[in-house]
Length: 365
Image 1 (cartoon, rainbow, N blue to C red):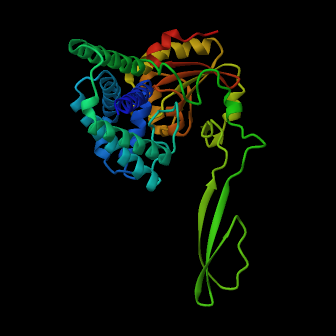
Image 2 (image 1 turned 180 degrees about the vertical axis):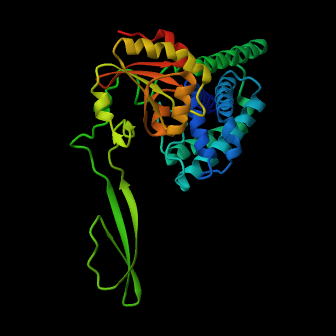
């Protein structure tokens, strides 16, 4: 039994550490996911949305520390109770998301390992069983270090977690797991291969035939049935292939300028998904870079999901002369975790990505 406890202990602990560190690498991404859960269409607790980033940082640091505490055997009662409460909450969240099809990716492992809601729910059920097992057998969990050393391990781990959170928020994620990482050819990433599997959808047609209900299932055409048609329900058997980048489009004055921009030799894109939430200091910091890029014959554009009034107000406030294009807000958030953020394209290939704090590190060729 001791061996089983040890296996469960290390498995749960390492999984919590990995899951926490992946999200700690990109707390803004996890905050965006929490905002999805808080929105009216899901849990309808919109009053928590302003605190999404704070909650995201707190939750992922706790997740890492609980994993470490479990492995080293520190404060085992508090640790196991906390793990149990946390996994109950996550299991409810993933079940709700899966059953009602509210959030298509739970964000459990950030963008590193995307999971469907049902996959996430199954993972949480397995973790719940393991944690319950550890709860029952907690007497067999022994510290692996002297008691004073346990406290120091947790203390130092806490400091390192807070430092990592601060660093990635003031700059960019240490590891970029998203589709828009440096080196990505956006043109190629938007293509659908010729041999890509198509979507498969079953249509369940309901008829009333001779006074009895009859359901006919087809994969497309309306069935030839001598009876009264009632309704039809669709069931997606297999989703169509989705390219890594599928929501990137640059619209200006109602026209799609995506291909034009992707074919330019040097483009500096200033990304700001929401100008009402943008960092004021950011525009002051990047303004000199915008001027230098223009002098070096870069095409410099802004990219935002905000309306024309917000764009005009920003340009006038900071005396910046660039054309703004519109794009899906989620896509802009995904491109760079900074508002504003900087992206360089060379013939559609991402060659640089920077937080506005690091604007002075942008290399102009």
